[in-house]
Amino acid sequence: MIPPAKTKDLIYYLNLRYRIELIPEEDGSWGAIIPDLPGCVGGGDTIAEALEMLEDAKMGWLTSRLKHGDPIAEPSDNEKHSAA
Image (cartoon, rainbow, N blue to C red; front, side):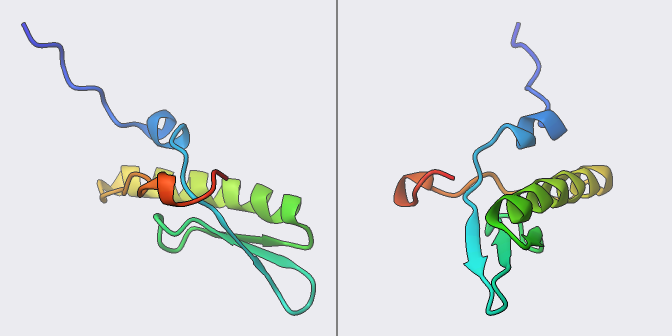
């Protein structure tokens, strides 16, 4: 008997290593995006704050997509990028 396929739930997606891009803004603040999750952005006065806001945005982004049954991309080939 074949075991059931693993459900890709919120915990599954939160444990994936998505590439993060940090963007310095002209005013000295920082933006942060996850290119594989369009529209998932964060920002703050410091890098740490931008990353914290991005984590909150990622949780909300993933929760919304799962709730509505929308597709969620898994991380693109991270070997081409530095780990973040």
